[in-house]
Length: 381
Image (cartoon, rainbow, N blue to C red; front, side, top):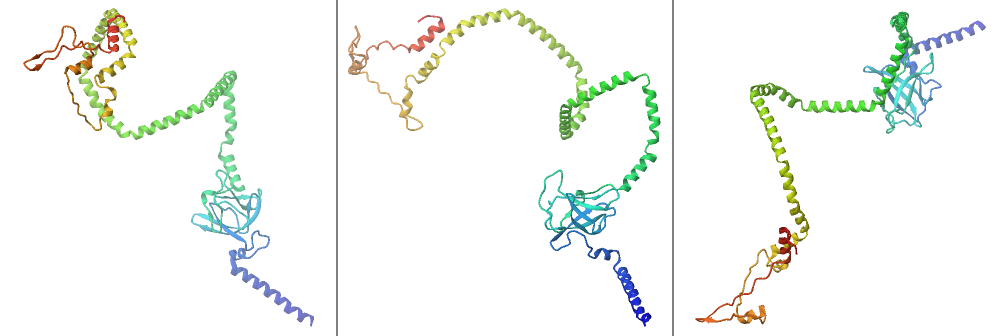
């Protein structure tokens, strides 16, 4: 009875194993990673997904850690091929805030450790915006650290064909070349050090010179058509100069003779020129003395005999001037005083007409004009 009871239990165990194998076979590789595994970060509902484009994911697998500042905050949800690169979907909790211009790279925990994705703000620029669900960190902002395999491969190339075996030959040849020339080599190194130091001190000037040269080349490039035209016309201009060489030579000889004559004339007339300038000195001194009187006198001459304020009487762009000449005896007496007519003079009628008496001497010019005349003539007041 006991043997009969054990048989169904063994059959049940075999059936469970067969079903498990069939399930694994049906799910395949991706089906296993689609199962919810324990221990992964950011598996709840309050999460968002960010895509990361990578040129090489190495051996990164789903459910690998996603870290920010060295702390694990999420996990790799999926990895798929997108064109010529890989697209890694990283699931992060809503409590993790990253800028929209964040960068990503694949790193390794240790030499033989697992791979993980590191997300962080950019180092060369400030943070901008916020990384949200569905955003993708583009390929230029991602990188992959060198793996142990790549380092060992590069080291093998260096050791096998990189010239390490030639170091002995190089050191031997250097020793032979410097044998007995240590002092000369030391002096050369000291001078080279001074030269490099001088270049370093003149670094700013060298940079400015290079920038100026760059601007000059830009100007030359902008004037390329003008320069090309000038170069094309240069043979014709040189030909004209060659044809006129005789006339140009004759002209230069004439200019030389003209210079000799001009030098002789200036030398001979030097004394006369100095004497003329010396004679002009008194006249200029007199003019300087009456410098303040000349403007006033010119003002009087311009307005004479009209007063300065006569323009206030005009109410338009022109004015009419009327002159009334009254030569009656009464008017003359009022004008020239009771002493008119002068002694020996009288008024008389001739055939019914009134003869005008002799007028007095005109008044003197203003004192300023007299002063100017006396000063110019060298007189005294």
